[in-house]
Image 1 (cartoon, one colour):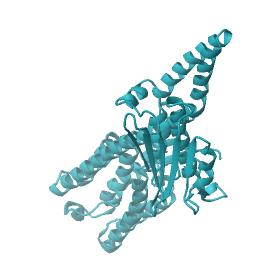
Image 2: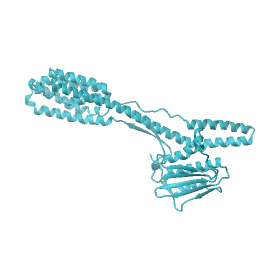
Image 3: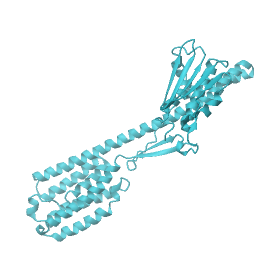
Length: 408
């Protein structure tokens, strides 16, 4: 089954745009309602009616613009703020002076805050400071003098918009950091998978060529020497491979993009669960005893394949480090919640500290081919080795996988 590249888009600010859309509609009706209740007190009500007709059409027509950062361009933000500032300044033309001096609302009322918040969400706290300062200046001009209520409202809009703009900037930075971490994790998983495949195939072939070449001598010895050099170089590359640079999008209008390679999805496999016994049976030879339950041991295809590959890696270690004549035993146990596979040999055992030394040398048979596979399945791999008494590898895989290898 082919792997697929997933593109995940993350945008923490998109809910803010949706909230702003609803806010503009509700506050537009609120401003119209305030005017309707005080219609008789206006000295030039036709000015207010004209403005509210424009505000009504503008608010509804620009809903797609404020639905996301893509269409909320700088020219639109300037035009939107102009509508708000014009309404504030027209208040003294349309309304009675006594109502204005008494602290009456401006024509757009709290709808103005929506225009300022659009600046904050789009451009951060600096844009918010610019827009709220213009609104503050228009309010002071409309009032004629800085009253307590005016100063209070100006400071409230100024602080709130700058705070929201700052929060948006922090959220965008956190979004990019999270996207970077997710992409590094995906790249690391893919590198580990490739390292396992290389270890299971290419490195073992190179090691075999080196041994056979040394035995045959002549030109074969030279070929074996070159194979040995390539094996060392490849092991170094596998053990310290580079994680590719992040491809996280920096476009704030689109949100952060993360590209990750999906493991083959079991949902796309038409055969459904497979019997683990059928994948392990080929390992049985005259020197390898295979003991299995009498009933099928079903696992998802990905989990069964990875578990069988881990068993194969354990047997390869037996042949490589104990010898071709070593005896080994495979035991499969079907527990209610998990499947346990034990691989045991009659070799001399693993000296203390040898696994850590091998991993440092780039020999990742246990670290990646066995433990790495089981970790990705949400299972565990335990090695018990007593000098002179052989080595036992116990592989446990949950039937309901909690790992990455058998889930999308």
